[in-house]
Length: 355
Image (tube, rainbow, N blue to C red; front, side, top):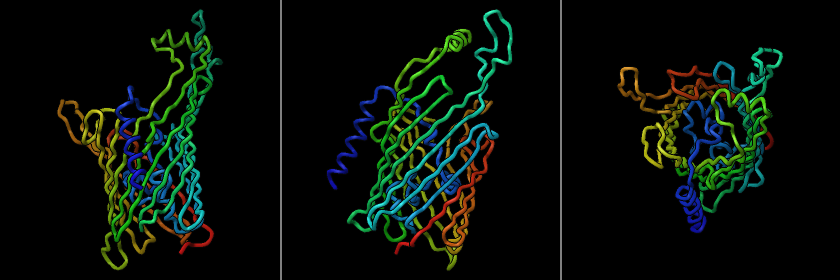
């Protein structure tokens, strides 16, 4: 166990110090999945049994098999975000999952051939294309000999495509741990621990290159995009308010390593983004959730800086002990900029219940 911790710390620090170029990359994987998580401002790394949030928690699902689905739309339906996951327990000590995430913008007009070389406009030359981000995630979870402690990891295959013009393949690894004792829960998620590389290649015809040149844009060339490591530390606690009413509180700290970001605690190369989630439950059947995140300093029109934040709310209900329906009223930006979205997710558990 000591050597495992040493290896994790060594890989994390080495990648942070040795990375020459920090880039925003694969940001569609940072939006979050599941209406429960989004309602709690993604403050679920300690309490979630989702492969996306903390694969080490897979071993804690209360059935042998579990299927989760989510669909959401952003920016008035322009972009669509879908998630699906299948979890299976192998034995009392281990479990695995297969998850798929897709983020896409469809029917984008391609006007590169709208105007020909003589200046004539031909609308029949306007076509459409899609910009699609796809991730396939393989997860594994294993219980340790220490009661309440489990470990897990994700292997991610990433495919990004912009019409027929450009595409990339990527690969990355996550590792995670979870510990529960009494009413306390703690979790850690190290995303892209080895850094994630996306290798881009482009296939631009002469019309597209000419359009780029006329509009003053740089013609893209084959390149490698890097996603630097991100660490998420989480702690939560369960409270019993009444015989039938309970409360879960959880605080998460997202630590990024790609330079200064507009978050509550910002520096170079580390920035820290805290967010908090609350979940009230009635008999563990009906849930009301609330979260606060995306805390930023914004400059107003009068040049006065103001601290803004994004509140989220949501509901959940468990039907027949096997079906969970969750709802979130959430956003991917600031509460005063982008419109809020209605997100629904469904979870179905089946087969023999675990002891």
